[in-house]
Length: 141
Image (cartoon, rainbow, N blue to C red; front, top):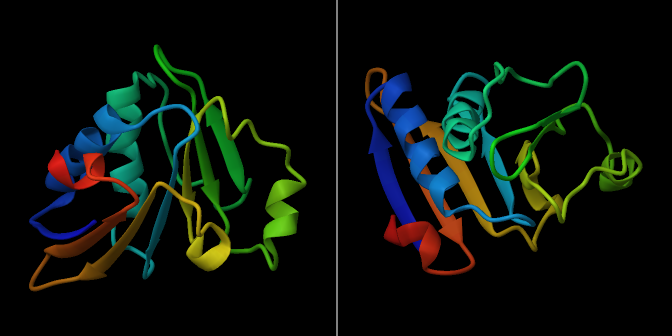
């Protein structure tokens, strides 16, 4: 299922993330792709808020991955930009099955991902967000 949304500003991006986060389940992998500055981490902040993460969620660019505890399901937030192969990510032994995992720059490494999200620049400050989910829950929210 594919749907496209136009997002007006960072707060609307967080709101979209909250909708996604409310539908997410342990074991889900959400892959985010798009140019630098399009709002991947902002979307992740909304997902984190819906999951009950209380600590600040920032880009894991330099640490590659962070695990955020929550009041429901933990959030694994990954930035795969500097990795050359998925095997490097697999070596981190992240708790994929017990968490909701958001992978920035995951590209084709996760064909099994529950949801693929591509964010692009739109008009003015808007973003165009394309959600491609494996089942209808991702486009029904």
